[in-house]
Length: 356
Image 1 (spheres, one colour):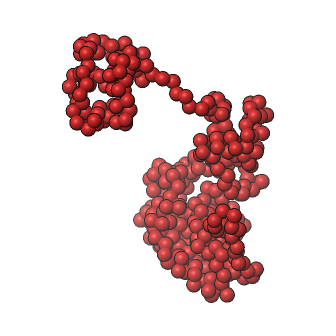
Image 2 (image 1 turned 90 degrees about the vertical axis):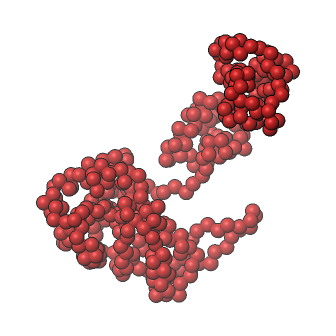
Image 3 (image 1 turned 90 degrees about the horizontal axis):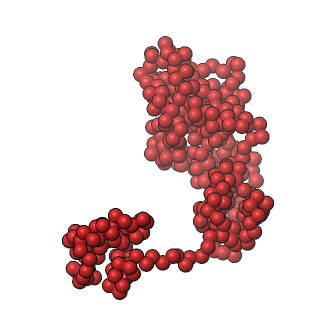
């Protein structure tokens, strides 16, 4: 039916037009609309009708076959779907979807099964629950980020929502100092320990094949101090042998020397080394502390995770070998790559509002 359609529509155009206005459902209206386009000459082929209606060619052909066999009456004979009945009513499915949006989630498919029984008195097989949750609702079991018991409820969300206000307050208080520099930049900082002990991770094997990973237990390590800029994707890393305020002070000094013409806001955690009373902070640097026990608001945490993926199941004879591998990985970094893991929306929006 790729050429001009050979179909005779007996009803006058005005009658079809009037019939079109009387349709009460979208399904019946779009079928009459197809007849109207054919009768008025606006479409002459199945392909043209498919484009105008937004339906597939086979659907249009089926409608026209119905019209040929029984006229408009048969065309409007819309059969109800014979598909299987939903396992649970739509409103309960909506409630389940909302429960799955909660970051605390469910611990297992069995827990979802128990929840349906306890709350809604619905009994479902494990297989039914798995199909519903995994394939229909697109939810799956994930390894959760550990959340410290001392984290204040809502603190992380409040920090995200009010970050722009915090930045503007800092800039206003330090206005005289800030004006001496070319521009303001926003960085995220943290430290990470990397050592000779093997970093574990998942391996891909065929079903029924248990993967094997060779590991070593050697307690030698170094510390990477890092800064990343979410807006530009720039970074500044330095290795130290200890995690303390002395090393942190030296790190800030080196960073300030690297970028002497700009004023820098550094977001970081509340670790003791960051808040030492003896800490000397460079004049072009100000520290912005995130809520206690809330690493999820700092994108450099995600960067560390991605970096350590490169080291999974790697065995190093000594720290020099580890340093060489870390150096190679860090040298591969591009602003685009860092920006892809650190350019979080809430930070970008806050910087835009604060005109940074």
